[in-house]
Length: 207
Image 1 (cartoon, rainbow, N blue to C red):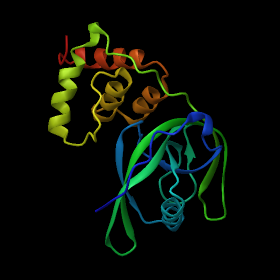
Image 2 (spheres, rainbow, N blue to C red; image 1 turned 180 degrees about the vertical axis):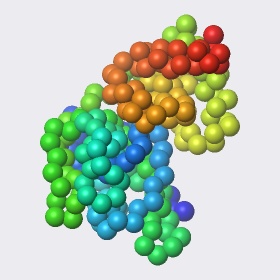
Image 3 (cartoon, rainbow, N blue to C red; image 1 turned 180 degrees about the horizontal axis):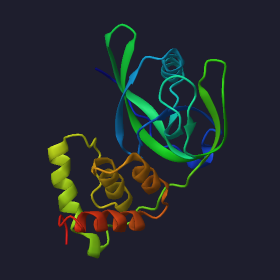
Image 4 (cartoon, rainbow, N blue to C red; image 1 turned 135 degrees about the vertical axis):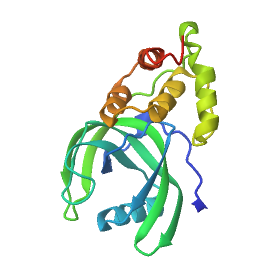
């Protein structure tokens, strides 16, 4: 698999105001990784353009519709995605892995002639870097253990950052996609951690 350099964190003030969208039945979180199989022509072209321009696209959870066929209706908040690894093991199917950047909110969107959604977006402010509160500290060793077992948390690891810890739990916990979406949309990292803690405490995994 070819590995591409991942760009530095962008300045939200310089965020592009338009972004092509890739609606999925999955949620990408900032700092997370997601593997995709690309085979529809509209998305093949999207990936080609991203390679050529070293640009990003947006991943949004589907609110109505499907991943293939007619353009789906996405939820309003999504995450910028940049390709950092790819390969093609069979003709016509491209395997890519993307890394999540900043969140954004869709202001409007429309499908182009190929069926690719093009959106006007505004960035959602990055969450402040805060320590994990003491009352929620039991989450950290649990996530460290989960990270070792899952083997799919890309570095850098920031176990002292409440937002990062919360995002990683949201990826790993066995919860419905719509629940992940609601957690993505929260703008307070401590509130997100409190929800995660309650979920785990109900299952006697933390106390």
